[in-house]
Amino acid sequence: MEYKIVLYLNQLGQGTFVDQLTAFISLIPFLIVLWALLSFLALFIDRKKGRWVFLAVVLALILHFLISEGLLKHAILAFLPPRTRPWLAHPEEIVAIGKAFTDSSFPSSHMASTLAVLTVFTYFYRKVWPASLIFVLLMAFARLHNGMHYPSDVLAGIILGLLYGWAALKIVRKIKKET
Image (cartoon, rainbow, N blue to C red; front, side, top):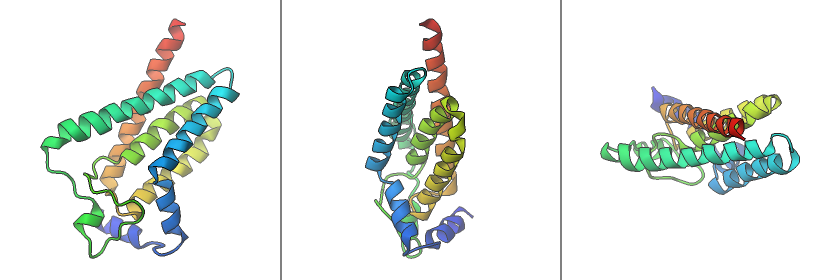
């Protein structure tokens, strides 16, 4: 079932601007610049909440890298067989679009980092939720369209990202209360 979903989405808009869009928003340098830009804008423009937003984003990303990239991928999941990315598992049917990652597809780090950051921004700036939702849906589509993940990888990334964002907000609220 997951394979059929990825196959359908991989072929949807293939060879059009959709490929360029999904490849671009999946670029790690783009995401780093986007998260940094949003965080610094909050820090320097919003005198009331900006430093808390900045701190929460930094904490959420630290949690993401320590847990998803460190503990999960290189410690816990390292003892299990890696989940082969769709484009590698089905090279005759699924085309890799953008950077062709070859490591385990589970969980989606793109989704985890995206949700971690956008959970923080949506908490502090409630009016951005429509833009956050659109970006999350676009990133989820991109990871499937690009042949990099199965839907369960994306779902796991979403859950982890929400947890990282929530944990960062809890830590920031505790620090804020003590100052």
